[in-house]
Length: 186
Image (cartoon, rainbow, N blue to C red):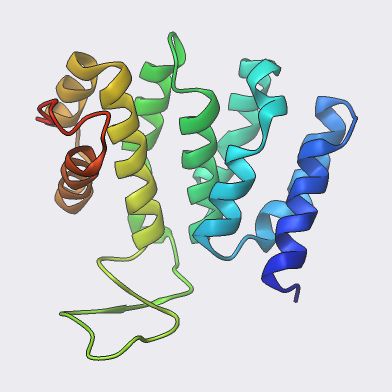
């Protein structure tokens, strides 16, 4: 097992390598299964500037295997990476259709869920339904989309079959964001 810092550095090396897209995606095949927390996942995605100029169709096809994973942070990676680099026209409709198909029931969390307010900090636990970090990633993606495409995003959310708690998280994220706090979420 790698410590947090080693995992972050590995991701930075992948993101800053001078190589072909195929070589980078091959490196990611080994790296993504090692992601075990939201900070590593989100930090990697935010710093993957190479993806902005990459072939979007190639990236989208490659991402599909991560969307159907049973591992929480592999699915979160697909969602957050899509939010960072594919949440633009004409991809937004495709991304929305894909997140609606996520099977939350097959995704296993490595964290214990707890109910109610914890009395003390409990390492390895989260509040909310499993897989919490995938649910939150979908909510974050939708809140980000609301800032760019408010009418389209509201239409999608109100007609989608997303779990009610994901929609509730989305509304909360939209209200907390400086970009969307004055934009109706629904």
